[in-house]
Amino acid sequence: MAKYATQPDGPAQGETCDYCGSPALTWRKCKLICDDCKQINKSCADL
Ligand SMILES: [Zn+2]
Image (cartoon, rainbow, N blue to C red):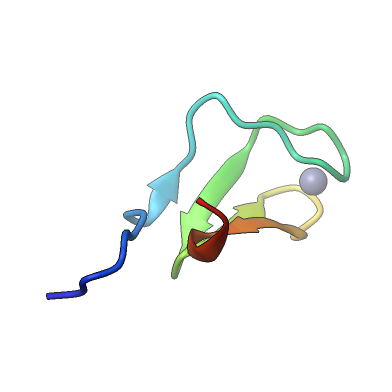
């Protein structure tokens, strides 16, 4: 079991992309990735 906080993979609710403004963001391997521009908006370390 991981001791640090993790975010389960899947769609993020209530988030918008800092780069293109898209609301379609997905958590993947502890990174919040925009489905449209593929930029990483956030990671678990930022939570
Ligand atoms: Zn984006």
